[in-house]
Image (cartoon, rainbow, N blue to C red):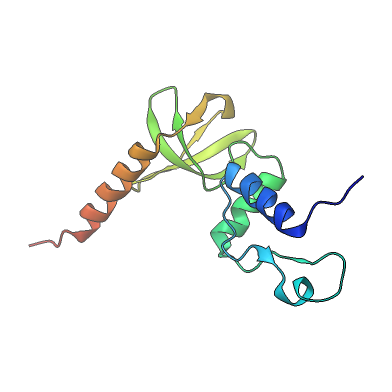
Length: 132
C-alpha cells in the first residue's frame, strides 16, 4: 500500500472533519518534522475551544446528530442546537435561547443555514435592547 503525502492526508482529514461539522483551525503539517529528513511528517492537530472538542468527541462516539450542530425538530418545525444525548433522545435548545426539549433522533432534520443565521441575529438583537 502506497503512503500518501502528508499534505494530502491533512487535506483529506480537514474535509472529513468539516463534513461532520468540526473545524480545527490549526490543523496542518508539523513544520519541524515537515522540514526534517524524516520520511513522514507529523500532523499538527492544534488547539481548539471546548465546544469544538465536545463536538469532535460526539462525532467520534457516533452520536447523531452531533453535539453543537443545529437541527430542525420535524415534528413541529422548531430549530434547535444539539446540547446532548440522554436516554436515546436528543436534547435541543432553541438557538435564540429558551427552554430545552427532548426529541427522538429520527425526528431531527438538517437545519437550513439561513434559518440558523436568522435565529442568531434575532437573539443578538433581543439582547441588545435596553429596558427603559
